[in-house]
Image 1 (cartoon, rainbow, N blue to C red):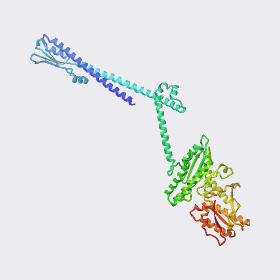
Image 2 (image 1 turned 135 degrees about the vertical axis):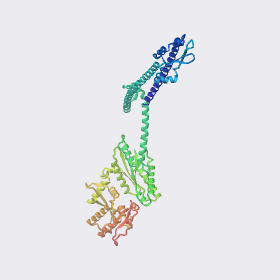
Image 3 (image 1 turned 45 degrees about the vertical axis):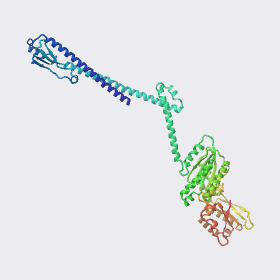
Image 4 (image 1 turned 120 degrees about the vertical axis):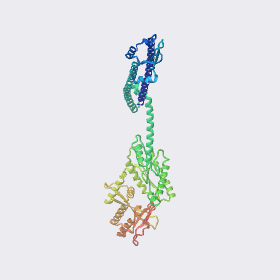
Length: 563
């Protein structure tokens, strides 16, 4: 469009120049013609009056002849003294173009002629009316012709430009289609144009489209990098700079669950056990420092395995992915974590740092199922000592009906066991370590589902602790144990019962236990309640060992069970 406007401007300037040059030459021609006419008129008058005297000229006839002739605009006859004999004036107005030329060129000038006898003097001005009309007509013809010659090309150029632009647009659109198809089919653009009607028109566009292709690829890479940077910022944990849960899910789905090649490895879930306690007692800043310390330990240990990835799932949970690492090697990973956690525990004066659940994974393993299994492994680790780890193997899952349970399933199973009292008690004699220590039988418990399938005891108790249902389970075990002792008349023997740490630190449970034992005081004096050493150390509330609730000599005995 800018080029077309420039072309129109050039045409207009050319038209103005043509009109100006034509007008100039017409004016020159007019001036020349008038001069020649004046010379001829002067010669004619000179020839006419030569040899004549003033008396030879009939004034009236001469005046009549001059008046009836359009040759002169002004004619004055004078005697030898210069006195005016007669005068004829016939000065019609000139057309404006002729007047303009006359003003600038002074073409029409008075002419003077003297007779040979010197008694006659003539002064005249030629009438150029006819030449003026010819001048003006020629000017208008030049203007009209030049205008016509300018406007027609402009109109034709506009129509031609419209057609050319339309054709070019169609050709470019066709070349773009070929370019798009070529990129989709991975063919060479020049080869694609050779097989089409665009061979002649499109060849010149190939370098431009190649440059466009490189430019688009470069921009696409920039956009992808920018999007990846934004994504990393959105998927990054603010405290540890590790990937968050969303990044872990995307990584697992892309590299494990939906991977095209066969893959296997180890997944470890690390849970910070002291975060809530540190936040409450030392402040959130110390809690963040504790999380950063745990994260540094996990990154350091995981960094020794090729291709390892560490993510922070939530406030207290981390997950480490160790590609191509079998579970046998993962045991060393768990031991290294436990060792470093123990060192950190001692330097920070904590009761524990973190527990680790470890499972193996393979291609196409659903993430939800894997997390359920590793959560079960975590529950097993939490039921052990401080900073403990637990590896959940495939062989452990074959006969384990609870392996794929989630929290809701576990809650449902535990509630059903409590309501139906599906417990099976087994007694095992404990050999005394000294002569002064009384021998007793430890009551061990087994839990069953409504289908009469045996549940894993350690997992069951660990999940009960996790779901805050351990106290109800302990009550069920104690009630069932007392009823069994009475029904089998075993009140003369000594028995040991395990109590979970959460129950041992719960005042309401201790009060309930006192009241329950008061109903069977003859059995209460023969009971030994065992709590793990880790369970006693990990709580801040008072434990059963400090409880003075006994009835004279018949109170229960408390023991610390060393695992």
